[in-house]
Image (cartoon, rainbow, N blue to C red):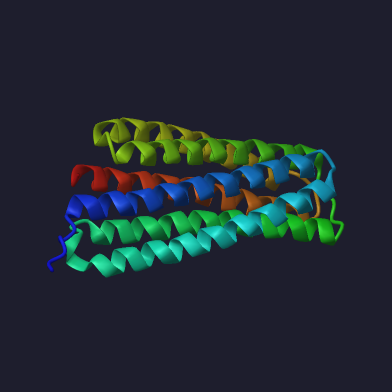
Length: 219
């Protein structure tokens, strides 16, 4: 008995489905991070810790899906023409999630150590991560379109770049403001570090849509 050989289109659809699941996980992780920053700004440490716990749970799911995705791409070998682009896409999405968890860990540590941050800056950081969440949501929308309408995916990717520019502008403004303030060095370092991680998430978002464009062109 002869079994039918999978076509590249079938393989591509299956891998795209898993990529969509990963972008959904990234949105969920970033949403918990945004809630965490809001709760930090509002002086709700317990809620912050709950948000971080949720992030860790989602990361467990994320890591499992990433492993499945890498195994899937590796198993099809040269049957998938854009295999290397998908591998790069998988790792870029993973880096975004890692940065988000890194921020969550820092905020959780701030609470554990009872360090005080000026509400002006926690509010500004909360605003930046809200923009990052908006960008991640647009990336997910772009990824959703990739399977059935590559042209639409190309159009949606522009909105991701526009949001990244807003994140970049907000971060630069905050960074310069913090450097100009007279406050403890520890506070300056924390605010700048968290802000830089958020900017890195946004920058990686642009890398992701660039890869989505490349994959769309090979559809």
